[in-house]
Length: 103
Image (cartoon, rainbow, N blue to C red; front, side, top):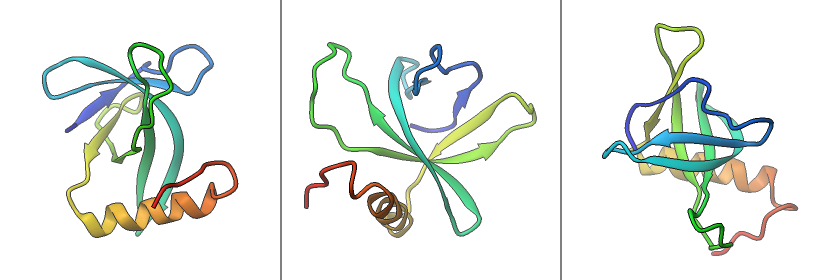
């Protein structure tokens, strides 16, 4: 996922956001957390299966970037494995009592 724009993508009062993938398809995610790492903000998202099943999914970590509009944010994929690992470790430590992390 690259350069995802978010404006009014939150569904009602829930933690769901809708982003567009590289092909323009809408993909639903559950917002899990916002993590600050090395002066940058990262969002941790969980894909929501279209069929409503309780599939075991991996989280998605995207970097939050400001845009020219105050009402819009941009989510950019993170290519640096070290950054992804560090952000995920922070997330796991914060939520060790709420989630069962494998591996």
